[in-house]
Length: 171
Image 1: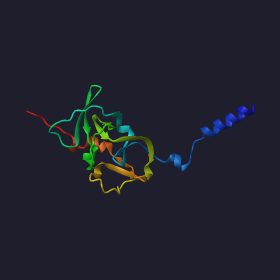
Image 2: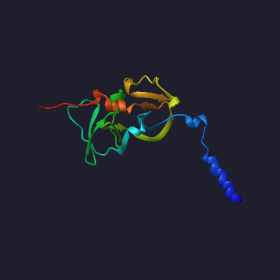
Image 3: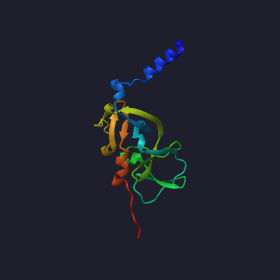
């Protein structure tokens, strides 16, 4: 009987609504990754999948931010070199390169990354809207920076930016 009472008290304590200010704070679920020494992140809900880059096809006569195309289980996607887009130095493709496939409203492409970190929840109050990092020439793609200096990129802005679309017809 004593066992049942203790279990019931624990169940009631766990069932109580948590009204602490921390529990009510809004969070953003992000998937973080590295480009060189810097840590970046995309909002997780805009990521379709993450794969290791094994083989890809470079394309001639495309802007430098297009690394090529990838055949992903019969589905052809463009590969975006995020370093080129953000104006960062370094090479994009190594044997450890991975691809984050972003998707929103019918627009999809893969983004090359150096290393995947993982998924975390960032409090919205901890995201600074003004980026203190001067290396970012393309602020329109930066959603904010956390107190830990993780740069949160705006995947929706990348996906919908007409400057990043390559549409050329050959007649």
